[in-house]
Structure formats: structure tokens, C-alpha cells
Image (tube, rainbow, N blue to C red):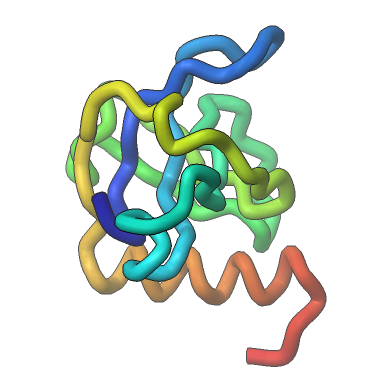
Amino acid sequence: MKRGEIWWAELEPPAGRRPVLLLSRAEAYSVRELITVAPVTTRVRHIPSEVPLSLEDGLPKPCVVNLDTITTIAKVSLRERLTALNAEKQKAVEVALHFALGMET
């Protein structure tokens, strides 16, 4: 488990089973019960707080990571590792996260 991986997670309704991108720092996964994630969704709005993903990124269909709706979930909610983002996509996530939080890059 590490930042930049996408996992299937069982979340509370209405979200249900969905892919999430792990955002927590590396050290958190071995000691924390709660982790920070961003949902992966097929609802594409084409805004700077989204990072597009495709089959080439290991996802079953075109989608986006939505950095406007980062959240904290129980680590035990994670079910199965789906894929890991490459360095270029991880950098895009950082840029989108800075935009979503109104932080300078």
C-alpha cells in the first residue's frame, strides 16, 4: 500500500464499491487506521482539479481522479489493488490537488 496506487474500496452508501487513489504519506499506511484518498469517477467535468485516467493507466474505462472531493476512509475499506499511477500522472495529481486546495505550486 502506497501513495499513487488505486484500490477498490467498500465505502458507505451512497458511494458503495468504487476505486480510490491513495494520497496519504508512505509512513501512514503501516501505522494509521485512517487514510486519505481521492475518488475515481466516470463523471468527467474537464476542470483543473481532475486528472484523466484511461485503460493505459490500468483502469477498466476512461475516468478521472477527482481532487475536489478528497476524503479520509478506514484502511480496512480497501479491498483490492487495481493499479499504480506512473510518475507523470502522480505529478498531475499534485498539480490538481494544489488547484483544488487553492495552494501555490
